[in-house]
Image 1 (cartoon, helix red, strand yellow):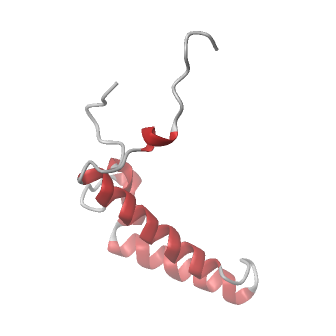
Image 2 (cartoon, rainbow, N blue to C red):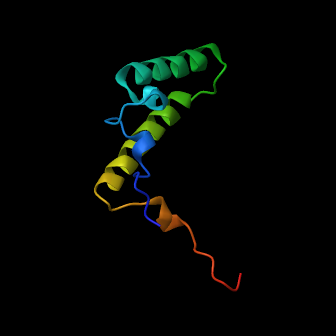
Amino acid sequence: MDSPIPWYLPSDKSHLSLSSFLLTAVGSFITRNMVKTLEFVGLAPKGSRLVQNFLVQTAEGLVGGGKKEIFTPMYFLKPLSDNQ
């Protein structure tokens, strides 16, 4: 069923809410520097900054695909038949 709320809304930077604080410029700055610091002191493994950057870029791409209606997570779900 189609939802009245787009699936990508929680990851959309243009939609501001309390739960999407980490998507704002301030939240992104805090997250990026926290990961950098944790990696520097050895509490996060090396490469954590690269993974964090990759995940941010991926989220931006998924939101863009969702807005253009060329991607939906439903493409990855197999519908159950009545026989299963």
